[in-house]
Amino acid sequence: MTKSNNINPEFTQKINQNLSENNVFMKQLDKYFAGTMSPHEVINVCSTPNILKLLHSTAKKVVLNQKDLRNAVSSPINHNTSHTEGHQIEISEIYKLSDAIRNPILVLKGNDKNKNSVVLITDLKNTINQNVFVPISLDRQNGKINNISTLYGKKNIAKYLSLHTTDIIAINIEKAGMLADTEVQFFQSIYDTVAHYDGSIAYSTQNVEGFNKIDRSSIFQ
Image (cartoon, rainbow, N blue to C red; front, top):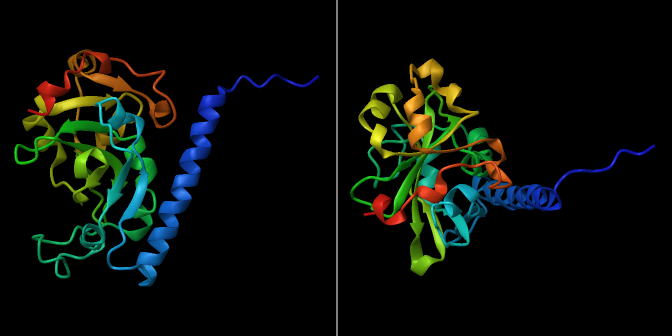
């Protein structure tokens, strides 16, 4: 007797969509690292993930400029002149970027200089084992794109989060423990006061809580 298939068709469709987008992204990375990419080509990382849609982003996709990719994988002594240093992220980690931003560990408000932005803390690592931060400027070019402005590892992430606790927008309840080796500890009050989600956020918004309480104007002001 054949077992019935209880998988949500929309869930399956999103899995296939993500895989297709990953393939496009990886082919663009292949071109870039082979030196055959046009200098004016923009890298399509993925369509706007659920985590950004829940923050009311209306852009269709997330993109990465070549100069920012170059800086992300460069060493401190071989970086783009618009940055203070290279960020030493392994190329193999860059290939995982699409999935990492669909399902980040934490989402924080962006800095004061870029109001309409967020920072995703991911489970990607640079060469010195620091978690990779991914700042994203939302709804750029008249709302057409979400632009990754840089990728970098953060020194002393525990201190950083202690200073930016009020900037935390959302937390992944399954991945938060990945920061334990950086001495980051989350008290129950964090889970009670910010939005939270699990790994299914990459495919569905069914298991998320608290996003309906988020006032976008209070975050991006």
